[in-house]
Length: 454
Ligand SMILES: Cc1ncc(COP(=O)(O)O)c(C=O)c1O
Image 1 (cartoon, rainbow, N blue to C red):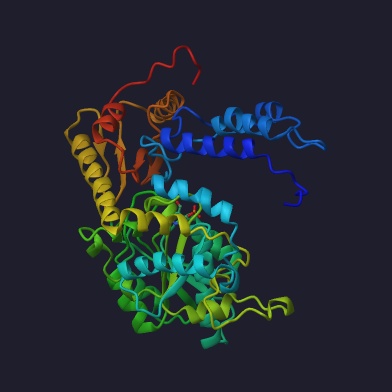
Image 2 (tube, rainbow, N blue to C red; image 1 turned 60 degrees about the vertical axis):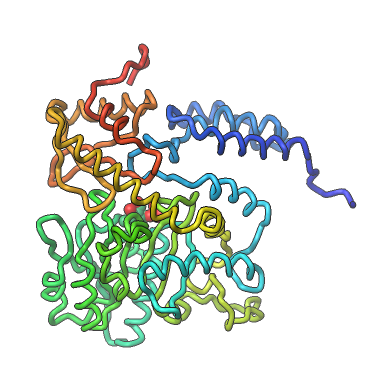
């Protein structure tokens, strides 16, 4: 074999594989977390230099400096923001995906991988009740998925109604922050729709907002809001959208994973009539970062909006399924493959069981909160987000309590605001989270940090 320009150090390669295996087998360290930038700059000084520091030292820095300064996302007591819970099969297989170095933008370069990714997308499309002609692509996250779908929607509206000068997107105040960001990128206005008393978009509110307006290019409904896990009234919204031929996009980045469980699927009735939706397998479908499934009912509109045309791309066979044509990207990692491998390994029944297990844990925690003298439930959850109060802690004490537990590695549970007040928020995605452990911590006092400052 001819010598490579960049030498291959087999023992170093083995060390990296061993490190990955050790991490996958033993899981993360819950007390790991961010450190000040100045400290990290000091500890990592000289890593990138003309002569390099060598693989062994770089790996040591990764193990001892870099990883300990990151949050343990896939830890069962990480209930802050939206954590992650990749299956061992998905996590391990991601190493193979990296090694295979597949270009997933075009069929010509990635056919096998794209065919497998499309099986995973098809499973999700079937859960939603989308037709056989539906199709999509895995993108980096809900933010890019939502933006890509909304761009396709606006292009269709422009085509149909070229007279409109400035378009608006209809949504509610509880839509994810990525929606306001997408509206900015697309330079469209927001038409804010009224909600019921729990913050859900209703069909009636949508009808009154759309009456006498022809400038709304899409309705953005949420299936599982980030702050409270609320599901908009999808069926009534779908009725209004189909009657008025307005594109319905459902942001299910967090919540639509629960379609995998037959017991919960009816809560999403109406999703079958959406024009597009996203769900993030890196949130509650047990896949590693980064992975968002973006699915269109009629992918032809997405291709019209997104296909990149250039002389050097003329060779692309546009009759094949080219993932680059369905979102804002060209080069792409085949990031849906770990999900595909995990589905193939465990079977979809285990996914349904895992969602049910999380929802059972949510119900147990809710029951524990209701039975507690120190905790108060804010409202009954629709899905996997629980909001509760600790009347014995003022706002400042809540922050100190959360920070102390973060430092101790006992739980990651951060405050949020709800109806103008600070409340605690738990978001569950991990089937290994145990209700008794959670209840013990959230109803208890400050942890002993052994003299460490908060
Ligand atoms: C409902 C919802 N939509 C969109 C997003 C954005 O997803 P991402 O962080 O993958 O871009 C999130 C993230 O939490 C979300 O909860």
